[in-house]
Length: 271
Picture 1 (spheres, rainbow, N blue to C red):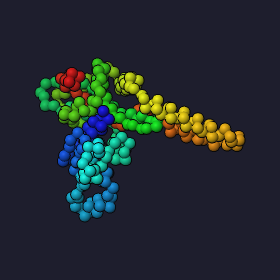
Picture 2 (tube, rainbow, N blue to C red):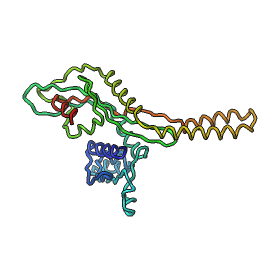
Picture 3 (spheres, helix red, strand yellow):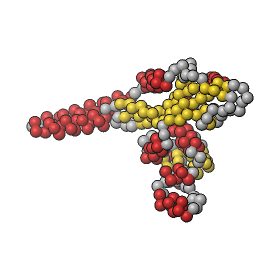
Picture 4 (cartoon, one colour):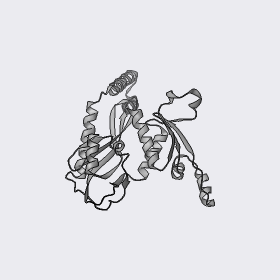
């Protein structure tokens, strides 16, 4: 699930930022970067300073990314950069998304001569971090219909073929939401909590057992020491708990309001 989810996220990120996808399959992406993303991702500040100063067009780089390096021939492994949850490249992309703002308001772009209502959807793109002995991050995109409360998981992928505009099309009008933003947000977070409760958390058991093992070893080590070492014991105990105690953190990467026709909303719910 994680690999497919990440591949789709990368594809969407680069296409939405006006990059050309030169090649792709289920694991790989070859991307011709835009000038803007080359500046933000490739660490070539002096090159772009020179290009701008001289009024030149500039030649952005290409990125060779894979989410599964084990599928590569040996000679190709060095050509591709392995992107995974927690990798520096992915953190870099998250920082770009944050710097561009966490909130958007978009309207479905349609051509019509009839009065057409647009249904409001609140969409949250969430990062779920599983923290313990091993660490994992999962991306979720969840949308809620603010009129009837219907919820769609992986919403951002369901709407990737819809065309959008920053303003409402002629003859279109927005429907007043029956569920306010605050309560829509709460419903999404309640759904995420329910999903997490239904998951198997073997990773947490493994991490907890490792923590208890480390704490017992530490306790045995300090049993032979006098009271002057108690401060050191407490510090090391806290460090062990910080490293191994399992927890799940849910944070919003970004989100927004999407106004969609009734017909499209119906198709999304029944696709």
